[in-house]
Length: 162
Image 1 (cartoon, rainbow, N blue to C red):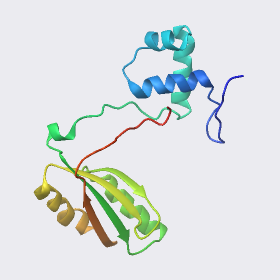
Image 2 (image 1 turned 135 degrees about the vertical axis):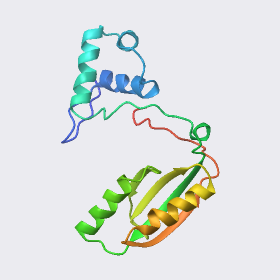
Image 3 (image 1 turned 60 degrees about the horizontal axis):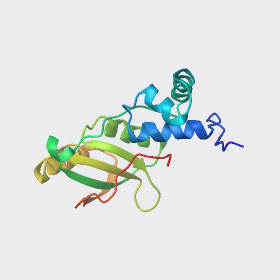
Image 4 (image 1 turned 90 degrees about the vertical axis):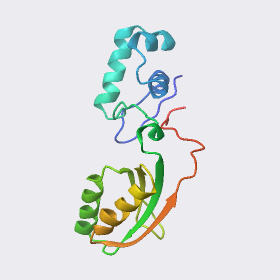
């Protein structure tokens, strides 16, 4: 009996689909042939399974993870942001502006004292200061910002299937 995972939005994924996802998470450049050898299927069904998972949104995108320190983006800051107004329009306007800011690589809505958590990358403290004052600080609806500077990364992964 094969193990399946299913939700209202997601098609059923069997053990082979999960194995394929795990392999792709480990190396998005792995070939269909290499995957087929590891999951013991021919290339056509592997390709069809991947296309189905792409089409259904299970696979959102393929990405290259780069070393920020080698690209002059060595300072990572977590910004906790609370907004003054919590109306639908005010929240949508904040989100629209955040999406335009290249320094913000992640934006999460959170519960608790703050409304959003931003992961911001910049070259150095001067560049972050410029972002904080001249971009984030210029937004109308900001009530409070707390910045936490990342001293080091202990674990960083994007793998959801393990």
